[in-house]
Length: 307
Image (cartoon, rainbow, N blue to C red):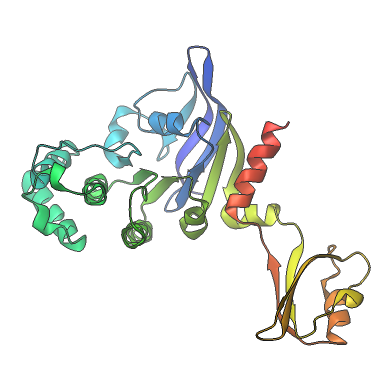
């Protein structure tokens, strides 16, 4: 697999505290990669090392096939969770200033900013002072200045924080559009619903260690509990369950006379169960229940903490 970022046995200590303890993982090119973990797990420290704000005490980080060096800074865009713009400056001035810091010439920066300001419907705010903008408007400006120089790798730390649902969807759409263009995105968040929607892979860091990594679809399969939902036209299916099948829950809907049953089925017994149920009732729907990323996060962190 073609990786844009490779983390190899990285360690970072602060005084007597180990913030990152022998962590390794790969970030494939052109994917949205979730960096997850409880508060204080070490995510921010890892992000700071990728951005070369601080350096590892041990281990190596490789960017685009080379050991991470100062020259790679220009290929990375970083939107931190704690954001801040120069509040007394005009919006256009601060946007141009930040764009020039990323290496864009003023004329090119202005052209790109005009495009993004129109796209995000904030062109009328160009000559307003930053302090006049709402938090959401300021975050739009910072998102724009993060992606403006078209880096190979974007790192978003809680990018939807402070946005209403409409603008959160706008940012989500833009993240997926950037992915389509081949940009790699590291996405750090506590919102597991967002992880399900946009992440291809994740790493879960807890107590400074990598406790889980892989493709989201594969991880959901790894943590599944062999539970299935069966919706039938019969109120009673208990007597139709074959040996080894456990009825977890049952809900009857009086409006449409349907019964929803959650059952736990031993591996290889699905066909036998369906045959048994179909002998006496119609099956309207049958699906496997996969765990949510929220459930996986909680279970993985709890299991590791109890080891």
